[in-house]
Image (tube, rainbow, N blue to C red):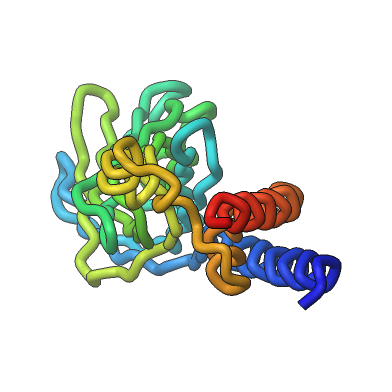
Length: 229
């Protein structure tokens, strides 16, 4: 194969590999889920169903997670004045991660009349991935503090996740092996110069760098051939 054809073939394969990487970019899936809350209040047990929406937006090295209630839950026998009610909640993590995430929000900005469902403001928290993979976010316990009392509302219907995120932990998923072995290697650790191997090895670097990488692979090939002569 001529030099020009070989260069064109490597460039085409590298571009295709770059496209595949872009198509496999981290994805998110959100779904509004009905949550049946059983609430323990100072005046007895109450229940309410509210659709829960959880969204995630990349922020620095993590994600800003926002939890929203589309209907009010619980109620108070007396009016709650402005700033009298403080909400917080937990979000259960699943999939590649486990544990829970605490989310908080501002106190009520307007008075809440007596015996009306308490509308919860959006609650937010920051999630930093500890593992790489798909992580799910599911509504957990809601806590409402007001007038010196505490109400806890626990999901009873085993709700499904409101959000799924494909996340990458700091340092990537394969950090323990790559850097340790690379330090002692020599030319043998470089990507193979075959068409398929070059495309795969360089494919994760993005379209612009791919072309430069392909040219570098050709240079290494010619240099190795010259050395053997």
